[in-house]
Image 1 (tube, rainbow, N blue to C red):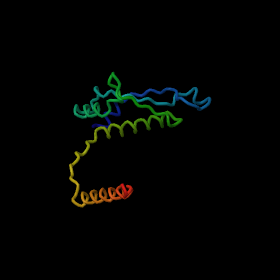
Image 2: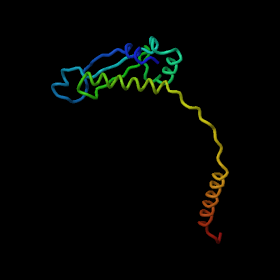
Image 3: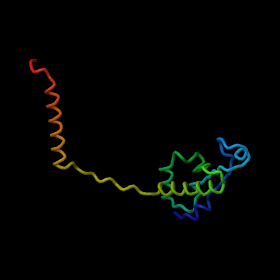
Image 4: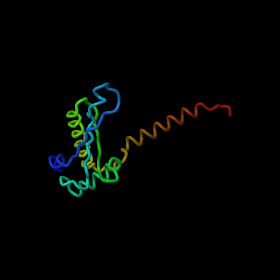
Length: 133
C-alpha cells in the first residue's frame, strides 16, 4: 500500500453539517465527505484491493466507492484531517492479516476440574430431593 499515492486519489466534498449550530452552521460547509474508488486505485495491488472489497463490502457502494464523512469539528480543515486519518486507519485494519487460530485441547487438569464441579453440582441437586420418596 502506497499511502501517499492513495492520498492523492482521494476526492473531497464539503457540505453543510446537520444538527444545531446557529447562524454559523447554517451558512458554512464544514462537513467533509471523502470518496475513494477502490478499483481505480493505483496505490493498491490487486490482492490488497480484493482484501479491501471482502472486508469492507458493507461500506463500498455499487459504483465501487468507499465513502466516509466527518463533521466532528467546526472547521472544514480539521474535519478533512480527521476523515483522512479515519480512512487510513480503516484501510490499514482491512489490510491486516489475521493470525490463524491454533487448535488446542483441554488439559487433563481442566478436564478433572470440570468433572469435579459437575459431580458437586449433581450432589447439591440430589440433596434437594425428598429422602422419603
